Length: 111
Image (cartoon, rainbow, N blue to C red; front, side):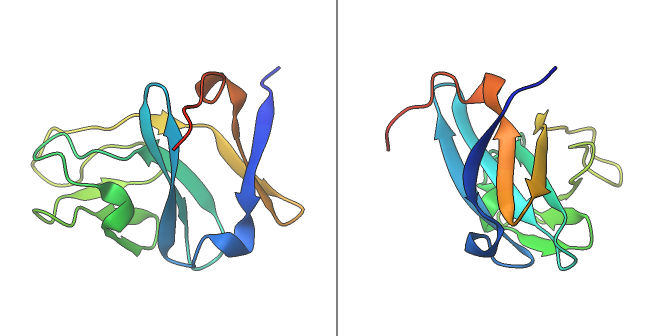
């Protein structure tokens, strides 16, 4: 069974926006859609290293702010002709709180 850690209130993440969680293994972007779904992806585009947390969220996709590649929030795969993919992480919203898979936060860095 997966353990989850409470990382934020759902209202702390703007609709169609993101917040960043810093971990020992890198930054994770936690996204909130217009209908309050939450997703978590590696916060670094594989093409130019753009911060996906600063991209535009539309539906269940995010557009990289540096070069407009579109990533599916469910799979982490770029849509279209690009063969890029970013790591996804287990996350859920429950009782107005956002919970992230504890395995990725066990060695969370202070920042």
